[in-house]
Length: 157
Image (cartoon, rainbow, N blue to C red; front, side, top):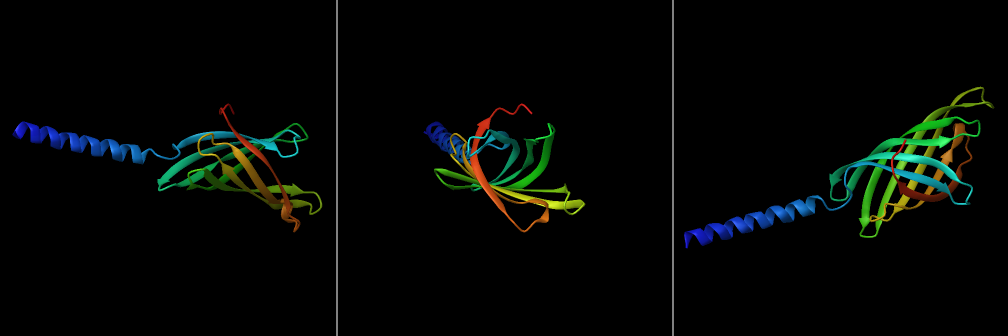
């Protein structure tokens, strides 16, 4: 009888460990993810977003990384990114990141601050979906807004 009780207790403990382990792994796995950001108007790739995700639990994530974008002069721009990601419901993974940089403004004749905010609405299964962005380039008061589709891709850059 003692052997059966001990075995039953062991089974309950193992079941509890399996349940806790499954709950701990629910959601997005921490790591580095890459997206290709396409323009909404079909004009091509706007850039590549390489972001590392850290899980703080309960659907809260921290995001940091880079956005690389091809420039018209043939160079590639690399910007630093930081932000947050939230699993807002079973069907929506929202991510907001900010990019700040000093760029040369020919009108001002000096470096000026550029701020770009991205907001993604991703499917938690495919990790792809629409994104929206607004920017305040070179400290000009006019704000530009645009968007497109961010598609999860292999990190090759």
